[in-house]
Length: 120
Image (cartoon, rainbow, N blue to C red; front, side):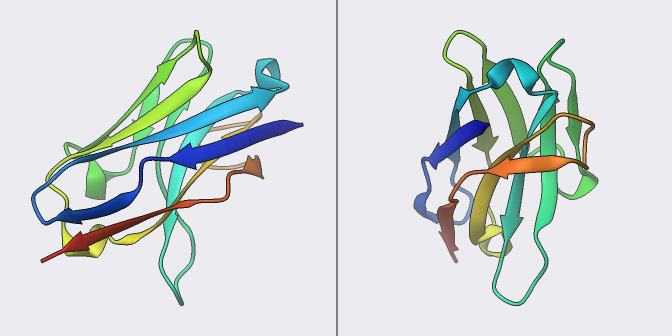
């Protein structure tokens, strides 16, 4: 199993920045990709961005490309999500998760989520 804990959420004004962190522990050697997702009430969870453990390759969806950047500290098994130029529509519960199969599928282990609220 892999355990994940997100942190770094909070309240920020539109145009501001936040950096989320996802600490991982357990069977981290089995992780193929680590991804960030978000969800708002009444909507499906949305995939945002992922990073591949082996080589640091990244995959980012178009709607956040240029504003959201994923990175990884292999020494601490922590994955970060840097979010810039935040908009009120970025308000959501943000989750990190790990997959052993691919960029957008196979996410088996999830954190508890961290709330991001962007005020206008």
